[in-house]
Amino acid sequence: MKAVVFDGKSLTLKYVENYPMPEITNDDDVIVKVEYSGVCGTDLHIIQGEFPASKERPLPLGHEFSGVVHEVGKKSIFKVGQNVVVDPNRACNLCNFCRDGNYQYCLTAGINSTIGIWKDGGWAQYVRCPQDQVYLLPDGITTEQAGLCEPYSCVSHGFDRAAPILIGTKILVVGAGIIGNLWLTTLHLQGHKDVTVSEMNKTRLEIVKKLETGYRLITPNVLASEKLLYDVIIDCTGVGKVMEVSFNYLRHGGKYILFGCCPPTHQASINPFAVYDKELTIIGVKINPFSFPKALGLLSAMGSRYLNYENLGVKTYALSEYKSALEALKTGSISKAIFKI
Image (cartoon, rainbow, N blue to C red; front, side, top):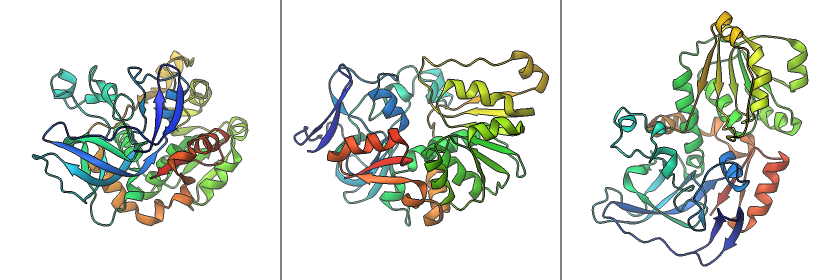
């Protein structure tokens, strides 16, 4: 089958047309024929050697994907031909973290066993998945829309971690890549209107305009000159130095949501007295524990009003066009690349 394969030892990608087809090995396995598979910022960090991934053997990356059931084990609840989406993360169900419902902290499962990072992923025509990581798409949700389900499940978890975010809250979203845009659509759906977006890439600000949220769009230099303060700051950049600067824009009682995944080497310096004096809250958000049902609910509520690929800045590519996809992401001419397989 066709696949884009990552070699963790040499940090290289290669398009191949003869990668081995997955086979049913367990009675509850599901083989998904992939239709849409996203390129995540984490994938870019992996390719650059800034985020851990498997080095045992070359494998297809891709932890954000949707498709159609192609084959099932004899004890699977799924049927061939059903439209599905896959949660790439799971619990070990044995450690205290998992048994407390917090598998994002698990030291053996969670992000440490992710499909598309540690196991064969969705940058391929077919993927084998345990059925407990497969979700049937409700009527009205297309596989195209479900290509965004995994990142929306992370946003849903972040929204829960930051709750309550009351209507009328003054919000700053830093970074208008795809994750910033998914936060913007979620905030707009929830009725938030006092939202400012800071992004240094003006092309991305033009993309945000297509969402027709009416939010205020500015560049970081304008943000710095205004000296305005915000109740909630959602950092979608994944850059440590951005936190160091934008943390100063919190007003008393504010929350800083560190959502963008920074490489482990990044550092940020903040003032402990400001945390004490303003009673500030720093909120980390890691993956998507049990939030796929909520993400599917979000997709159902959003529909074509918010999930239009063009308006979100999403562009689709064939697997063989992976170099063009990565280059477009690096230049910021698009907010997200998704392989249409």
